[in-house]
Length: 441
Image 1 (cartoon, rainbow, N blue to C red):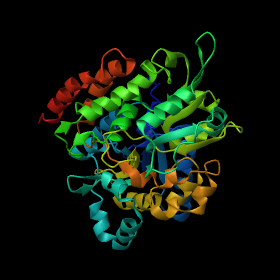
Image 2: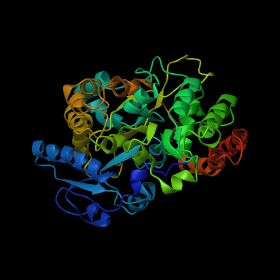
Image 3: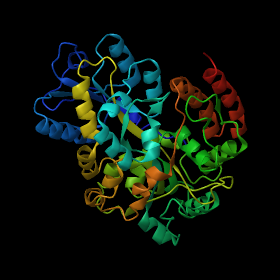
Image 4: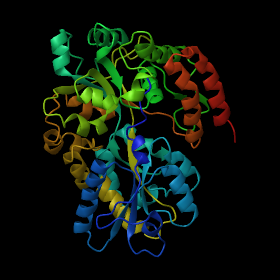
């Protein structure tokens, strides 16, 4: 069940630079003689517009601080490496939970504990209003290298009309009492329709995230953390029997049960479009899909938690992934005080309220998650607690400076499993290979 690699990470393919006033080259946007505070981010056009609303409101309230918003081109980590090494590192950086540790370990990011110690009122407010697991995600080797700005964990979208027409009970509405792998499979089978020729006219399930991450989410919900420990791990659990069983279950959805498109199918179709057009009953993805799914006015959809496997010791309590981006300050910035004011604003109540009302992001502050603005922006969703409680039911993926090497090995080794070419038991070899990378100095 290999989807096209799109989603919040796939957005990094977008090229160009976006500012509130004009388009400019990256080098000019981060030039050391520029008098503006530079804010680097990656986004699709809809997300870029929402981020610029935060920038515009900040500049309205802080007219003495000029902000130049710089939109990433493809290869965000390579861009940051190149330009920071060349003395053109942006002042404020959007960072990702899976890759920021590499930047922190190389000294690119400033430890925000320095500012928190001096700004005790904001520190207390942030501590009281934050979702602990999201905030802690950007804590590494004793430093606080970013503040979370959005939750982008994954869950299930489902077509309410297709469920009703098939007489299939709607999925659970709460993370703390989810459905089982078996119940999920039964529903997907009942919702898959074929023509007389055998051609599928309606899929029971489609994946709109990166497939090996999605398979790993099923493993999380079968009781297996990806790594031991989560931060600076020395071992990945890819060869754990429960991890292997969950990945095999996920692969079998397409290759054995035929309730999801397989690798050849997705070469000629867009899985988000299948759900948006009513040709798929269930879709795995995150909040970044909301803009796509609200465009068809007659698409009657809702959201549900992921299913849980038989090895999950928490019973029917399901989980998502932490899935968050953060705001960080460059260690080499000459405008750290201005950068701090911007990061405080964007990650604080006002910036988070703008994000919540945009319907493009799930905010990370407790007060804003419960706000009327967030609810109003999501009137098409009835099971809103799946979003508002999702951050509290999220588990972290590995945080390591070696993540880029780890994910390259995952891509190479999990692909054949998900295509059905080899069994998931082959992941023992992946686990050994990754452990060698993690244990290398």
